[in-house]
Amino acid sequence: MRYILNETPIRTTNSFKMNDIKLDLDLPTSTSFKAFNGYDNIKYEYDKEIKSPLGFNTKGTYAYIDIDESKDIILECNSDIICNTVIDVSKNVNSTITIKYTGDNYNIQNIIVNALENSNITINYVNISNAISLISFENKVEANSTVTHNLYDLSGNIRVYKYNSDNSGDNSSSFLNSIYLADNQDILDMNYYISHRGKSSNSNINVVGLLDGEAKKSFKGTIDFIEGCSKSIGKEKEESICLSDKAVSSSMPVLLCHEEDVEGAHGVANGKVDEETLFYIQSRGLNREESINLILQSKFNRYIELIKDESVKEEIWNYINKRGQ
Image 1: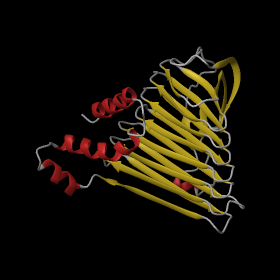
Image 2: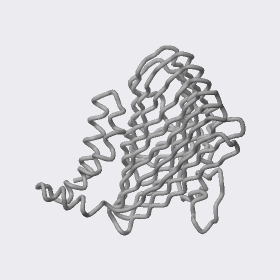
Image 3: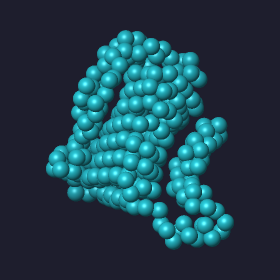
Image 4: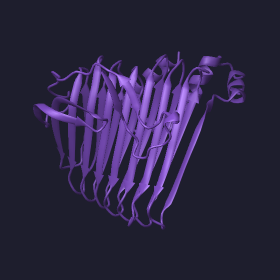
C-alpha cells in the first residue's frame, strides 16, 4: 500500500520533494508485543487503536509509565512492536529513560512525554535493528521543565522519524540531539518541529550523520516562535557527511517567527570528508577506512557521552566501529 508520511508543517515547492515521504509498505495491523524488558512498573492496554502522527492508523499496545520520583530506567525490546508509550513526569523529578530497540521486522512507536513543572527528563532512544522503523516523539513541556531527546539511529533500510515538542510553559526547554548512519540503499526521513509558546523558552536541535552507498536522507527542521513567547531562544544545526557520490542528502531548516523579541538561528553543512584532514591522519599511520572512522568518532563522541549507562554506550560504539570496518 502507498503511504504519504511525515508531512512538513510548512509546505514548499513539490520539486524539492521535501513536503513528505511516499513509501510502499505492507504494514502490520496488529502486534503480539506485550511488554518491554528491564522495567516492570508499566501499565499495559492491548489491541488499542493507534493513530500515528506520521500519518497512518493501526492497532497495538499502550504502555503507561508514571515517573513520580527521580530514577533511571532502561527499556529493551527485541521483538516486532506497535506501541504508544505515554510517559507522565511529575513535578520536581529528574530522570533518564533509555529505550533500546534491536528487532528485525517492524518498529512502530509513538513516544509521548508530558513533563510537569520543574521536571527534567531525558529520553535516550537507541535503534540498532534491521526493522522498518516508523517513530514519532511528542512532548508537552510545562514551566521550568526540560525534555531532552538523544536519538541514536544506526541501522535499518527504512527509517522515518517525527518529533514534535511544545514548549508551552515559561522557561521551558526542548533539546534534541540526533546521530545517524545510513548506507546501501537506506532511506532516512527526519521531520523535527519545536514550538515556543512560553516566555523565555529554549530549544536546540543538533543532527549529525554519515551517508554511504546509495543512501537517501531528508532532514526537515522547524523552530516556530508563537506570539507571546518573548525572550525565547531556538537554534538548529545539521551536519551530513557523504562518503559516496551516489548518496543523497537533502535538508530544509526553517525558522517561523510571530514574536519580535526572540533569538533564532539555523545552519546546515552537507559535504564529503575533508581530504586534507584524511591525509594528515593517514600520515600518522592509519589507513583510509581507519581515518574515516576516527573522524566519525570525533563527530559522534559528544552525543554518545551523554549516555550514563556504560554498557549501552559501549554497545553503540561497538556497532559504529563494526559498520565502519
